[in-house]
Amino acid sequence: MSAENVYFNEEHKLFRKTVRSFAEHEIKPHAEEWERAGIFSKELFLKAGKLGLLGVRYDEKYGGTGLDYWYTVILCEELVRGMTLGAAVGLLAHGEFATSAVHDEGSDELRREILAGAIRGEIILALGITEPGFGSNVAGLQTTAKKEKDDYVINGSKTFITNGTRADYVILAARTGGPGAGGISLIAVPTDTKGFSVGRKLEKIASRSSDTAELFFQDCRVPTRYLIGEENKGFSYIVKHFQGERLVLASFSNALMQLMVEEALKYGREREVFGKFILQHQVWRHRLADLLTWVEASRQLTYHACHCLNLTGQASREVSMAKLLATETAKKIASEVFQLHGGYAVIEEYPICRLYREAAGLTIGAGTSEIMREIIAAETIEKGGK
Image 1 (cartoon, rainbow, N blue to C red):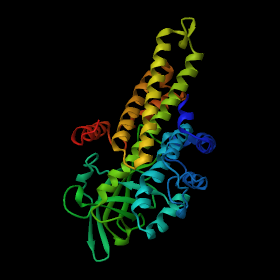
Image 2 (image 1 turned 90 degrees about the vertical axis):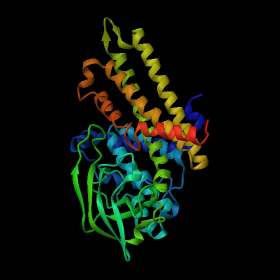
Image 3 (image 1 turned 45 degrees about the vertical axis):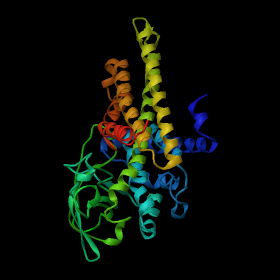
Image 4 (image 1 turned 180 degrees about the vertical axis):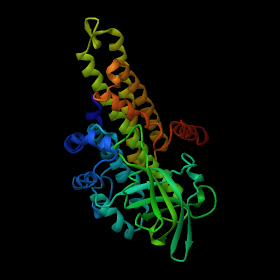
């Protein structure tokens, strides 16, 4: 029995059909243009918003559809079929990474001001956590937000920020208290605030069609009502929402692997070597069997993690395992399929060339593979897991 029949019902399948059509008609025809430009059209947010793709897990009161993480997984798997991962990354960085904190911890006032418009695609959000000197070490971040009467005065910088060049709000992690994890808060910073500026738009090897930027904050004065949740509780919110981000990266990776295997099948059935099609040679038949097995194992672990996250809301160990396996396996499969294509693999007109690049950054985003291993080890050793 296929995984699709085990995990997904008719409603899931209808949603999958909707997203696949969106990817095929609204993303794929523009993939080459957006890859060259290093940014996808802003209109894509509005088109996704009209279809309800930017608020699948959020309260209907704010325009969401109140569904679960299965719909997030489907969304990720199908958006990748647009053949430009950056567009999928930009939409999910907005619709999952940044908006989740506003939805879960934000005040009703902030939800109405920011979340509702974000779900419609009228307001673009970015998540501002990573700093030049503090990537994986979130607890060490140095951007400060000092309270002065009814305002926070923010100083610092962020880097590698998806949607950074055009966000209307940055969901910013800043230090409002003492050192370490206990002094961090989340603040929604309007980007029209005096003192905010965008630095370089960073050129990348992967996810080229998503804009990634440096952000600077110089004496930015933001009203305290833009605080998300409780002051100095931001680190716990970030850790909680990392689970959704990592499920997204695992799902992207699985979808990318599926595309690569499809390319291997297509090319291997058409290309002759020494009088036989490539996939008639035993060596490549067996290597393909390995690829198929790796993809299925990764997909099943991701689905298990999704199931656990839906059940309990806390599945850090399972999601970290899924993200680790999926992203590392995607790089292995990219290498194998690249090799199968021979000299054509390095030619830009062949999809494997782009897919190979896209796999490169997956082990970095939302926490590196090294951080995933540390989380898994800590959950198992220190907390007595199995």
